Amino acid sequence: MKMLSAQACQLLTRLAYCGALTATISACTGETESPSSAAVSSSSTLASSSALAAASSVPSASLASSAMSISNTFSSVSSISSSSSVPRSSAASVVDAKLERGVYTLASRLSGKLLEVANASNADGANVIQWPDLGGPNQRWIIREVIEGYYSIVSVQSGKALEIFEQSTANAANVVQYDYWQGDSQLWRILDLGDGAVQLVNRLSEKALTVAASADDGANIEQNTPTGAANQIWQLNFLGAVDGPVEDKSETNGAENHWEMTGDTFTHDPTLYLEDGTWYQYFTADWIGSKTSNDGRNWRDTGRILPGEFSWWRNYVPDWEPANVWAPEIDRYGDRVWMWYSVSTFGSRVSAIGLLSATSAAAGDWRDEGLAISSNNSNNFNAIDADLAVDEYGDPWMTFGSWNSGIKLTRLDPLSMKPVGQLYSIASKDGGIEAPDVVYRQGYYYLFVSLGRCCAGVDSTYHIVYGRSEKITGPYLDKNGNDMLNGGGSLLDGGNDVWIGPGGQDIINTNLIIRHAYPASQNQFAAVLISALNWDNEGWPRY
Image 1 (cartoon, one colour):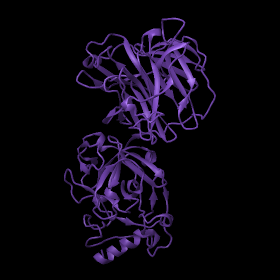
Image 2: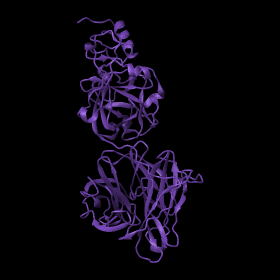
Image 3: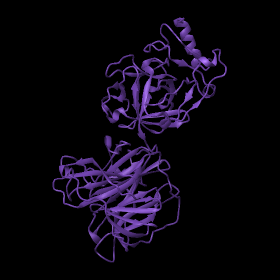
Image 4: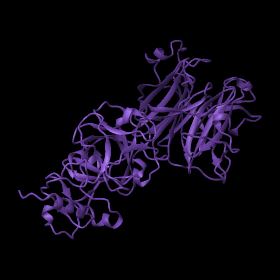
């Protein structure tokens, strides 16, 4: 085979990535521009895309199928430059991938080791390295298309995106994680290099994600000029799909609308779910109570969803009182319906949040998914009152907590729906705070909480307040600019002469609020209240 000189190889590489040439470099000697990359291999294909060249100088090469079936993961289109001095038969097609939004691992062809955030760090600027597969959330990445042809790669654990350090365009610039902001330094083109492998090219720098020429554990990840060498080739392994953003059904200045409730109206700490035209309500009761309705207004009791306690509960709450399971929260994420619930005792921080899942609410085939998070008297928080929050990108979070140091927030693994990463404190209040609910609407995250004394009939002082933030992690400010972490909160529902102690709320699709309250005419059981949740011209909630 005829060998090309280093200079000729480098020239062909430059021409190919400038969109001037479609060619297969069959052999090269010497080094290319990247000081840390090997010479272009005999199987590497360099090709130009006329469509890409018009919009960007990012190189376009072929995209591989992932470790899963390509038919399940990719939809792709081919684009080959017609202005080539190389016969078309010798040039491979350029393929722009359409990856399914989901969770992936990325394994280096050079080493077989996974791309990971070093030391499972949650910090901005944390280094990215390669390491053997340990199954940790710092080795799993959410890949989603941000603009056509460009993807963000976000750590499951930290929620931070793969980025070029200080937005450098230089060879050997370090790759780190940083807060997700969708800038060009966080966007990547995913290109096929054949044989089930891909190359990732940064939109800002037009350089490829590269292992720093080592197969060692902990070898650094950097960027370098694309060459197609083994240390720039990655195997995508698709682990599962994730959801997109939640639908916003809210109205601005909509009409006040309190739904008239009939039938079995008893409830406490209710959660509401609509599936195929049927409304499902779940609430605090022996083994988690359930009701259904055809219209959300006339309710009938449908019994308890659990047959009894799970054996692991008493590992975390030894003094738990049989049958009483608190504050369920139901929602669909991915291809399953999920339910969080609390096992606890009054006046104690010895608590556990458990997780169930089912194929659907109608099927009711609830499966024990085990512990989500627990607390004990050594913690400054209480693991009760969990609620699912989905951010503007479609990533799941869990907010929870009561009294003590207040309301907490943590990321969830989008496949297991279990907590990963750090705990954030987002609200606190002397005298009691609980039942958090976070929803995203038109550029803001809204936090609703219940304050005051619960569960005391007409002597209850429960009431619902709220604040908002531009980031899901806070700070949440009320209408007067007071931080909810310092006791702030604007009143949404303080009760009236008909209903006392409203709280334990759940917000559905930004347009409905369900909660319990005590009828002032009797001092017995709490009843369900459902109202339309509307918004004023300044983006504050009301009903």
